[in-house]
Length: 342
Image 1 (cartoon, rainbow, N blue to C red):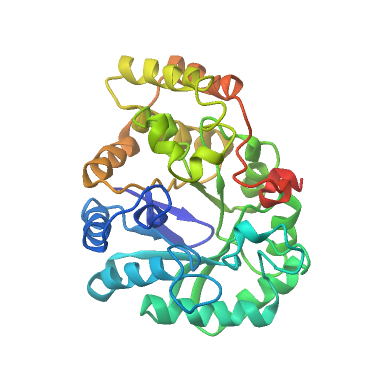
Image 2 (cartoon, one colour):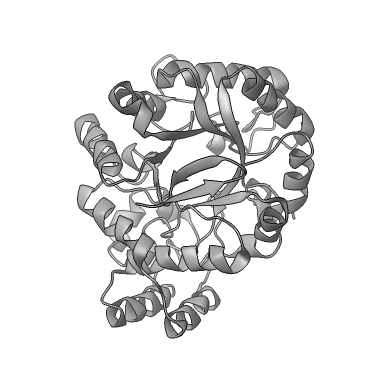
């Protein structure tokens, strides 16, 4: 698989792997299978692995981010650290669902917490350096300059190589970039989630910042392989798009499937190829990070890197967003995603 450079000098595989998928979020899997999937991704040349301190089930007796996904990734790194470009994130305290209580913070970005989070992730990951370290969500009570300044201290200390930001607005990105170089922004971007194209993606192009789309397959919905019963059993069943608007959004799946059938590809390959095309049009290096619990899907997704869409396909896929019913936010608070703060 060819490589893409994010920011000035962070080189990654052209596709990444969203490791959140192998922890109990969209259905569970056992640890041995999860580890096998991670190894299969690296074997396929998908060597850019994305995790976060908050991914995974909370451990008994702990308070705050679970860290169980980082510990799983550590088992792969123990044998293959030199093959992997490692990304992880901090900033979500592990209390996403507790936001209705004003006494409980869902995010933290103060300097003391930033330093603590970095050291904790390094311990869980069993490594001495993180290749790309993201602020997972903005703590709106703390100036972003303070958060990024503390993150830059970790770079100076040799604990982090490059910095990233997740779900930031264009103005937040610009403010952060004045403090330290930002290699990548990670936000939701896909055929049916295109709000970032209005302000954030152009700011990335302006500043030379790469883009890492999460949920590039619409949390699996765009693949056309999910059932309503599957989705109802996890977080996706609570979202407007794949919950109450499941039936209406089948038009989206049908549109993607029509392109895929004509090109003898799968829905997933077409959706991922569209993101590469969108990145090229915007002048932004783009590395999507689909996740899966299936080794077969890894091979399928990897083939999207070489799939070139013709003008007819791009025209049809560009129209998918207009067919979509419901917003992309997974929580009620509009400020949880960048478009809610623009």
